[in-house]
Every structure is written in C-alpha cells, then in structure tokens.
Image 1 (cartoon, helix red, strand yellow):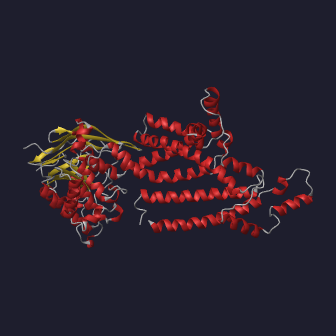
Image 2 (cartoon, chains in turn red, blue):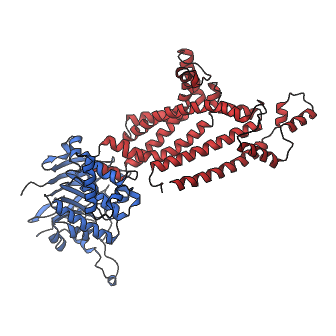
Image 3 (tube, one colour):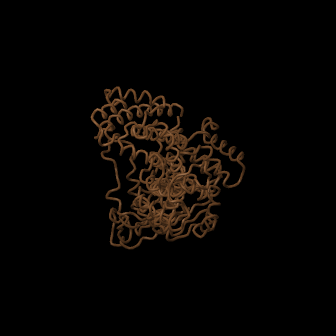
Length: 313
Length: 320
C-alpha cells in the first residue's frame, strides 16, 4: 500500500508541473492587456508602459514563469493587480468559505444519495425507484441559479426564515453560520446527490446480481446485512471516484451559486479575476484548483486502497 | 418408502428475457433421500441451474416460481416465512456454486466470511473461528490461520473453491446444492475437489443435489440421476443402470455424444440438431425435432412414467 501511494504521489507532482506550464501559457494567450485594464481610460501610453514594468510584464515569458513558479513554491503566488494584495492571502480568505459550503453540500448529497441509491436499487422498477429517478432528473437538469433564486424567494423572502445571502464564519456561532450556508449547500448538494444516486443505483444493481450475494443469501445472511454491508461496500468503490471528482468541482468554487448567494468564495473570486484580467490571481486560483483536484484524486486512491483489498499490495 | 429429505413437486418457473418469457422448469419433480446424491444433468440452457436454485427459493429478480411444492422434511419452503427459511439456510440447506472467483465477497477476508455464517446460526466468535479453522484444515488448505486473514483474490482458484465448500459446510447442513462446483477448475484440481466433496459428504451424512453437464462427474458421485432437457426431466433412475442402458432417446443421444478418447474415429460426436428455442417450444415432447424415432404421438404431452422399478422416462416409446 505504501508503494502504491508513493507512486501516486510522484504522478501528482508531475501533473502539477505540467498544469502550471499550461496555466501560465493559457493565461498569457488571453486577449487584452492587463495593464490597460488596470488603468483609467485616459491613461497615456507612457503610464501604461510604466504599469507594465511595475507588474513585470516587460520580462521574457520564461522569466515571468520562473519568477512565478519560484515564488509559488515558497507559498507566494504574486500580487493581485486588482486588489493590490498577495494572491495567497486572498485565497486564504476565500477558500474557507468555499470549503465550508462544499463540505456541507457533500454531507447533504451523501445523506440523500446513499439511502436513495440503495433503495432505488433494491426496489428496482418500484415506486421508490421512480421517485428518485424523477428527483435525479430534476436535480441534474434544473439550473442552480434558478433553484437558488426559488429557494431565496421561499425561505428568505416569503417565509423570512433564512438570510438571502452573505456569509458568516463558524466563529459567529453555529446557528448563524449554518443559516448562511444551508441554502447554497442544499442548492449544490441536491444536484450533486442526483448524480451520486444514479451512479450508486446502477452500481448496486450490478453488485446485487453477483454470485457472492446469492451465496450469502443461500447461507442465511440477513437481507439488511447483504444490502448494507455485502453489496454497498462493493458498490461504493466505483461510486466514490465519481463523487470525488464532483467534490473537486465543488471546491473549485461554484461560480453561479456564490454569485447568487453573495458568498465571498473561490468561485466569485475567479469570476472577478477573469473579468479584470488579473493574471496573478487567475493563475493562482487555477493552479490551486488543479492542486485540489489532484489531491482529491490522491485521497480517492488512498480511500480505494482501504475499501478494495485487491488494490492493496 | 420413508419420507424423502427433500422433495420437489411440479415445480414451474418463469424467466423474463428480452426475447419473451421462458420456462426454465416446466413441471419438474424429483426427490433426494437422507444422505443420497441426486445428479441433475443436462446441456447448458436446459434449466437445471434455475431449477435447482428455485428449489431452495434462491432466485434472480427476473425469474419467479409460479407453481409447485418444495418439501424439505415435509415442510413447504414456498409457504414458509422468510425468517423461518433463513433459519434453515446453512444449517440445513447450503449451496456451492460454479465460479469461485465471483462467489466470494472480494472485500471481506476469508475468515470473516466463514465465521459470520457460523455465528449467524448461534455460537460465539471463538467457536466460529475454531470451526472455520478445523474445516479449512479438513479441506487440506495449508496454513489455515494465515488464509483466514487473506482476501479471496490472494488465493488460487482451487483454494477458493475449497473455501466456498467450507462456507457451505460450516454449519453441517443436511442437504447441499452443488451447482457445477468444479466446472471452472482445471481437470487435476477438479478430481481433487470432487474426491474431497465426496469424502466430506460421507462424513457428514449429507444429501446432495449435484448439478452438472458433465456425465463423468455425475457417474462418479451420484446415486441417482435425473436428465433435464428444455425445462423438463426426461429420464430418471439409478446412475449405473441409467448410464449403462439409457431408455429415453435424449439420454441415448447425450451418452453417444460423450467423446470416447481416441481421435482417430473422425469428428467428435454430438447430439444432432439444434437445442430448442425455449421461448417457442412445440407441443408435446421438446426433443421431437431432434429425435431419430419421432412419431405423431410425440406431439402429445409425455409425462414422466415408471418404466421399471426406480426408473422413469418421459417418452411413450421407452420401456424396460
């Protein structure tokens, strides 16, 4: 198992390097000059040139890359043009918000999807199965911004139970912070739950048809044990990969959800940084997203190895 | 005759496929006496496996039992509450299946799979462990202690099949359903496993329903044989007599198709004609299209009838 994870860690480093090069090039290929974007419309060419020098755009590309990666390795992702503060600091401010919402969404998704997937499979073709099929269809196809607006209308405007948006950290008290996070988390979590439910259902059906289930049944293992232990443990293995990837998307920041609920998270930061061509900030955010994705992949591999003894060595 | 341990009467099963509904068992009756071995032989698709599983109420969701009685020690398994039936499993009725790679749970250790069956039917963790170890030893598995901690993928096919047998025997059942227990193994391992199975069966005084398409396996192990074709039992009788003097044309064709071991005699023998399409069976005898002696009478139903003491055949022509 140690060797398996070590191999994965090496791949992880390679992927990060490749991604950093790609991100750097792609950001440079975006049309528009950030120096102009940062100035007022009546700036003179000389002023623009001075700005270009000030933010290091006059250097050759490879030097710009070397400077960026060199400092990134020490945790310094450069200064944001727009905010005039360190990118790392901005991310450190925003990431907890996205993490909080994402974890909550994940919890909601799993709370819905595991029982829903299992019961859909064990009642294949029955009322429960159809109910969750419709739920999944709605969850997958309903745009989050629309679902978000509907929920704000109902819970914040009509009923007045919850604040319509904004964020309060956990330090503000569990009630306050949850009240701010619960709507976006439900919004993201239901869409996420829909995907996991379908995946888990088909994976459960596959496992329930396997011979070891028949053998367990033939020897008097209780039906509940067969479903929740024998079948679920096997069915979770493929489901987790998919769930892990989706969690990566959540952590990258759900742009629409964060905009609608006015959450100061990663998604909104990325959205603003792209609009203002804030190179260092875009680079830093995308690099962080790649890193998060790769780490989640790594965590999934480790979890795999725990769940599936065939992967362990 | 004393009451048989297990008696199946007029079993009818249904299986939904994309090509329509088929009946893998059409009015199947057989019995197994205490300590007896009954072989259920037939080509693939004859319905023997579905029949055997349905006889102990183990079915895939696509199939259903729609008629018949399944009498175990006189009690109808079909009329029994699920919880009562569960109490019989492993303790009274157990099953060994064909593919040992698929039949063990890949994410549970061998030890966990064995001991939980023992514990389900009463007894401590310790007693379960002892029973499992003793049984693995009895099945000639080297280093049983370390095997208990192993996962199925860490064992060879033969070893896995032994574990599967251990799983079935750990509660010393009175009846074992063996569904092609050696088909997935190579010949030398097969011989070993069959010998072991036979030995243990005698030790435990266990009755067995042995499903196989392999006549030599059947000949080696079974007291009596029932030959199945297209969901029906065509002929039934004591193994030796049936194999020496088959009375039903299908059994005769099946025996003639067993390779004799010299390759100089030209092409391998086979049962002439095509196996029947189970979704569209002709009225009467299902074998009529391939039967060399087919006659107008064959379109009438051919019930299984006694042709000699202990021998039955489903053919109007068959006689002692």
